[in-house]
Each structure stands twice: as structure tokens, then as C-alpha cells.
Length: 391
Ligand code: BGC
Image (cartoon, rainbow, N blue to C red; front, side, top):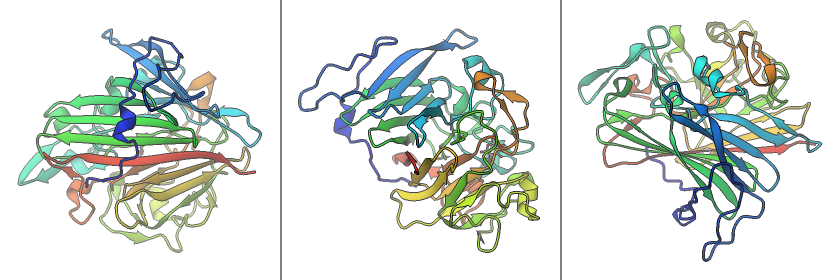
């Protein structure tokens, strides 16, 4: 499952700089590489954990004013500002104003998900003849890494400033036995904001015992802007001829089904809401879309996976990935009980997630692409989110 796409050249990584708290001063020039003009990465405090551990927020800004703010708790993207067709910046992700909101109860808003994004049936799998029992936190199943997944740990962070991008590198060590998983897993996740208006997410991991790994990013997008109601009018394209139907508990049945002539056919731009309430057993089971799509791809390089266009604001989002699948979740469990940023009440389907990943429950489906990382190999997966406007 190792991917070989290296988007951030090692030479560029040499320009790691540690800024003083809140400083926006550019780094000292380094021989051979001019400092970025206008792009900045800064650090500030975002509060403290109940045990006193400080949590920081890193703000990445590119030459066009796009801004990504990510915190060390869960690697959570707390805000993401992009311009609409009139050049007005708007925050296009759901979340909370302060750490408290994320600590109380968050449906994984903006977080890094691991060790395993999505579900593992009954929290059990057998690997190399040994059966492992994981924490169960979604009925009888294991979801998004368990009770305390990577979304709930404080990551170590380093800012990076390159010529045409700014980045923050998050690192975390998951101990042997963490949530039931074997092996000590060293994880590194990089958020890079480029001057081409892309947010590149690179995931790396190594282990000392074979273990499943399936890392993803769980931002809830609303391209019309956080707090502007449901996303049903936003037009989605997914480059998938097939998807993985689910049974009870949203566990894949193992079937790879064609999207043709179903509400799962997003091969041409279609409003998210156009067929969401159709008389379809899969939609009824999940209360809307909450399914993994099998991406059309050749080899394991970056391939275009999905595009979303908001006709009202003109904002567009394109997603490319090295992953074989993408979970499209239409925010069905949002029900108005969460009040987020600026007092916005998040109602039904007020945000969507497009989580690049391997298929759910792969450790129990030998026919699905493998998610097993072995000692001596490096996990590397890349997803690129590109923001634009349509006039
Ligand atoms: C899952 C949903 C789940 C949500 C958590 C998504 O990735 O597919 O079923 O409810 O995460 O809020």
C-alpha cells in the first residue's frame, strides 16, 4: 500500500523554521532559496488541555490571501478561508471558535483520522493468524480509530516556509496496543498551502509490527460558507463507476456495485440534494450518502477524485488523491444540536465530507486493497484540495 508520490521535496524540507509565538516575520533567507513573498506561517496559542498541555494554532496564508488555520489538538483544520467569485473571503469549513467545543463533543470536525479512517466490523480483525480486538465506539463497530483516535491527541508541530508554499508538519507516536492496534506507529501529517491555491495533505507512517493504517482528513465543507444552511444545492462530481454498498452498521457487504442508474452516479455534476431522498435502500440505511466510492485510477499516483461547485458563491473544490477510495458523507447526522463558529447552528446536511481513504473494513475483506503496513515499509498517501472559482 506504499505510495511513491513525493510532493514535498526533501530539499524544501530543509527550510524548517521555528517562529516565535504569534510572529509573522519571514524566516531568515537560506542560501539558494529566496524567502516566499507574502506567504506566511505563524503560531499562536489556542488554549490548554484539561491536563495543562498547551494547544497551538498555526495559520498558513498564501500570496492570494487563502488562509488555513490548524491546531495541534487532532491536527484539526479550524478554519479555511477562500475567495468567492467576487473575491470575498469566506470560511468554508464547519467547526468551533475555541478548543472547548472540540473537547466537549465534535463529530470529527476538521480532524486527522487514524489509525483507521472509517469502520472495522465488531472492532475485530485477524492478521498473520492472530485476532486483534479494537475499541468499539460506533455501536458494535470500531470507527475512526476508536475511543481516543488521532483526532483526540495533541500532535507535535513544526512550521515550514518554502519558496512557493507554507506548511505545518504534525507528528505523533501511537504506542503499541493503542486502541487495540499492534505496533508502535510513528505518524507524520503535513499540511502544505501552495501559491497555486492548493492544500496538500501528506500522510506518512512507519511501524514495528504489522498493523492496519488508513489515514484521512475529516473536514466538513460548505462552499457557500460556514453557517449558510444546507449543502444540497452544491454540485458534486465523483470519478467513480462503482461504490461499496453497506449493510447494518454501515459495514460494506463486500460487493463492488456499479453506480450506473442509481443515485450514486455522480460521474457528471449533480446537486448533492437531487436524489438524496430517493427511494433507495442504500440511502435509507445511511440516512443519505455515507458511502465509499471506488475511484477510477491507473497506478497509485495522484488522480482526480471529486469536484464540488457552489453555484451561489462560485467557489469550487477539486480533490486529487493517491487513495483508491473516497467516502462521501452528506452530513446526515447533523441535526441542529451542535452550535459552532459564530453561533452557527449546524442543521441537517449543513456540511459534506469527502474523505480520501482505503475502503471501510478492509482488514476483514481480503478482496479490497490492503491497508496493512509492515515493518520496514513506509506508508505514504497524498491528497490535494484545490480551491477556485467559477464565474
Ligand atoms: C462517517 C459517518 C460518521 C461521521 C462521523 C463519517 O466519516 O462516514 O458515518 O457519522 O464520519 O461524524
